[in-house]
Image (cartoon, rainbow, N blue to C red; front, top):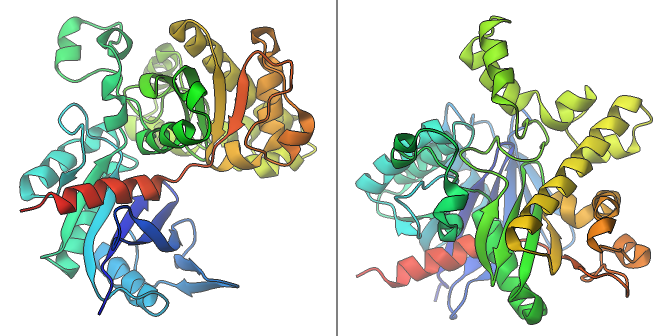
Length: 394
C-alpha cells in the first residue's frame, strides 16, 4: 500500500525549495526536502539524503521551460523518495492582496487572480504562475493549493495599512500588505509552544535572509510589517534596496534619464548589500571581508534593522521579545549581536556565549527584553495549509 504524500513548492528569487510530506496522520510530517538553485546554469537540483547530498544538473530553463523543469525535478526526486501517491501540491504565493486571505484550491479563476497580481510582485509572482501552469501541464488532475505570504498580515489595522496618498488609491489597492507571512505564521506558532508567556505579549520577529523584513506581533497576530506595498520596502536586503526617499526615484527617472525597467532592475537586483558594498550580496562574504565598503554595508544593514525594531516597538507600546529567524537571523551571531547593541537603550542585553552557540534564548540575565532564535519552516506551514484545503475538498 502506498502512503499518500504532499509536495510543497516554495519559489524564491534565487531558489525553488521543495518539501515532501507524509500525510497519513493528522499533521504533515516531512519525509524529504530538496532545492533547485536558479543562480547556476544549468540549474542543479540538490537532494539531501541521510549521509550525503545528491546533486543533479537540470537541463531545462526555469523561465523558458518550466514544464520540463518540473518533469525533470519530479523524475529525479522519485529516484530517492517514494512519490507514487501525490495527493496535492502546495505553493507559496507571494501576493494575495485583499482577495486571498486564506489558502485556496487553485481553479482557473484563482489562477487568473494570482496572475493579475504580477504587477504588485514582479520578482516573485511570475515564478508562482509558471510553476502552477507547469504542474497543470504535467498532471492536469492533481490538486494544487495556493498559500499566500500576505494572508498572515490581514489582521493589521487599517491605520497601519494606509499610505499617506490620496484616499482613492487605498480603495484601489495601493496600501501596505506585508510579506514573509508564512514564515511569521510558523514562528508565531512555535513561539506559543516554546515560550507561551512571550507569545501572548509584544513581539518583533526579524526574518533575515536574502529577502528580509520584520513583523510586529501582539498575541501572535500581525500588527505591522516593514515590507508594505511591495517586497522592495523596509530594510536593505541582499540585492533589494529597502525603503527609499521617493524623490530618489523621481531624480533617477527625470534627471538621470533612466528608464522604468532600468530603475526596476537596479532596485531589485543591484542594490541592498550588493549595492552598498560593491562586492557581494552575501552577508557571510561581507562579514569576513577586510574592506571598508563591506564593513559599511554590514553596519548599515544592522542599523536599519535596529531602527525598524525601535519604530515597531513604538507602535506596540513596548517590547517583550525580539526573535531572529531565517538564514541570516539563525546563523549569523555577529548580526544578532550588532542589532542588539544598537538596542541596548531599550534594555536589550545579549549573553555572548548563548549567541555564539545559536541557543534558543539569547538574552542575558539582566535583559529587559527576551531575545530568541526560532528557526523558520515555511514548507511545513505550506503543507499544513495545503492539507487542510485538501481534506475539505468534496
